[in-house]
Length: 184
Image 1 (cartoon, helix red, strand yellow):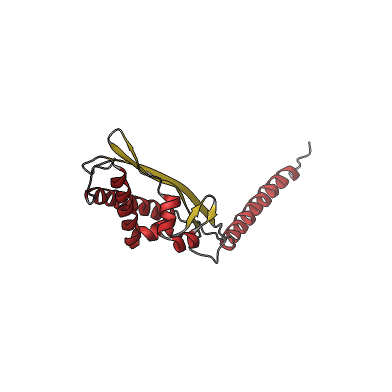
Image 2 (spheres, rainbow, N blue to C red):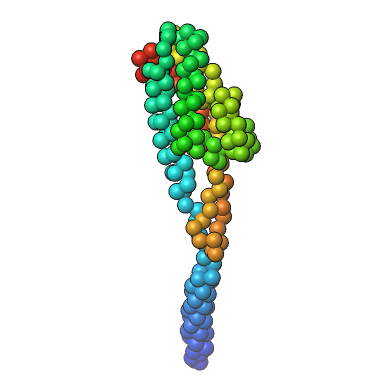
């Protein structure tokens, strides 16, 4: 009977080679991870835009209430509606923060409209942004037409691999205003 230990030697050699190759892969993975850094886009810009919209709408509601209370005449008459609309639009233009929110990063009908809207000012608000005031069932129905914002979100570290993202959203709002100045 012949004892041959060659099979045992090859098995031990295969285990050693396998462990060596696993170690090489692990080291290369670690080296490549250091070289392939990336930077993610923060959603901070989206949250700031949402917060800005909420603040703008609070100011808008307050301005509607103030404009209703400041108008004389019969509620719902043509003169009342015209005077209310003029007071409201003048108030929006006079409030720098509201104007900046409206005109900043503005996209209207699918195109960048910021410069044109700033140049037109109140005319833009009158013709494009705020719809007509309508008297329905003893209440004024007043709204903002669809308006869009578009911003570029970038990663905080431009030296690393990053993917900038264009963020665009559209929003509109309708208000129902009672004679007392309550805004719904």
